[in-house]
Length: 459
Image 1 (tube, rainbow, N blue to C red):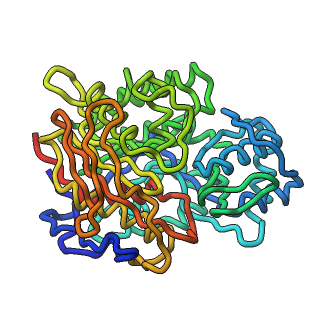
Image 2: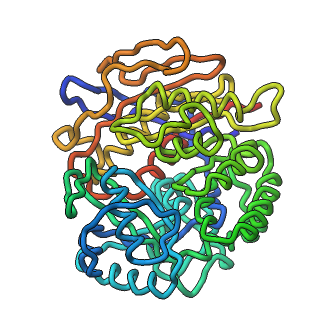
């Protein structure tokens, strides 16, 4: 089994406020030469990134009260949903149902002064991040139009069957910490994403994935884009999900599979993915605080009555939910599940949770993910301590349900480890960028970097 990581020590966090002067531990692994990326549709697109407030102003929309919408049917819905999540400082992603209206908004957005076009979609973003290492070769199956193909790294291989005449565009509306729109003030920097993406939502590249797998012989499969299916009818979604599950089941069991989650709104769909469909087939999951809370609400897990996070997510609450996922849905001697790893990331800290006996090098993996968060947000190659600050709690408890341990952070050893019934937790704070250049794709970069430093034990 190939092992994913770098061969040398690299600085990941600088020292600031007497906190976090640390180096990734020396690792014992080499890169695989092939990584296969699938995004269950595959979730590849062009991201149009610009100021959310400026776009709404360009559309002639006035500030007003926020309101959550599971699907956006109009500009009014867009305005209300953006205000709702901007006020919380939370990331979210929604489907815009009106094609004509969306394409009009997309044209205004892409032509707006200062708008930037990037590789988009979880799978393509993870592939692009991994492709920066010259030892890796990425196969990306997805709806790849001419602009996206131009933006992709040379190490990303696109099958001819994945090429299409028109790009899928996702609009990324960013806002900065403290930015105001009417009465709304953002507590921190984040983004609101919306699209009218039918190719990804219909899993159009599923068959291309299946036909490419034998020839490419991947060392790693990365799945993402299940959230895009929410734009489909319930019947279409269920049918394509079952076909995806059948395809995933055909992947050889010695190839590790990572699933990257994203913002969702349909609790029944999330419950199906968790209980019956996808979770038992994957080895690893990556997710953020919004996705974690939605997951436990959908499956009536611990702390499911919590409506939303208030400030930095409580470490004990997060730990309880992560523990429950692996205990109830992860691999045991009695349960036919392959799930043994979860990489949780939020703005202030990360937690890597693993079932004992299946993964190694967790300290380096979670440290590398934290480093990637700081460097990518600030657009610097290394952590610049003048541009970051510490937002993580300096003390916390490891559970809000069982008798917890109380942990105090030590700047000399910023990765903290604790253990709970055969499951290991590795926690590290993040040095948060004061003035982030770009927030979109941070979770994908974090998960990609964590995977590169993770060692999977042959079973």
